[in-house]
Image 1 (cartoon, rainbow, N blue to C red):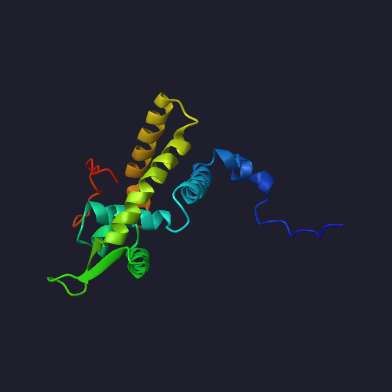
Image 2: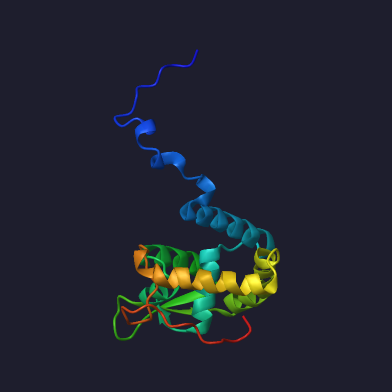
Length: 183
């Protein structure tokens, strides 16, 4: 016989909306699942030797050689301590170089090493495959709508994040990224 549970202060019957929403109608739950799915596909197609966060760091350092860690954190919407730890790991792996900035000895500027550039180039195919796999169940029009709504959602909710995306040196959200080289 199961143990008797103490009744909550407000019985669920008196608050029907408290649990009535289907879990799979809750955006937060679906976003968490989508992140789980994306991380699993990243691991399968891009590889386990690098994490999605490390990839984002390598990609942004490639686009903005010499970016400092604070600017990097703002550009990819990570908190500065996570960014610093991930950058330190990438430096230990020999993928980026961290050098003290001339103007402010507390800031570290980041550049890709030759090994980092080689690794980043080798990941391109997997990243493209990942995008295709994530979107291939949708027809082209749905893919466009999905990506447009996802960008809009992220932009509108940016300030709700614990690490909002910011343009380097600004408190405004980062501008839409420019078309970049083939990585």
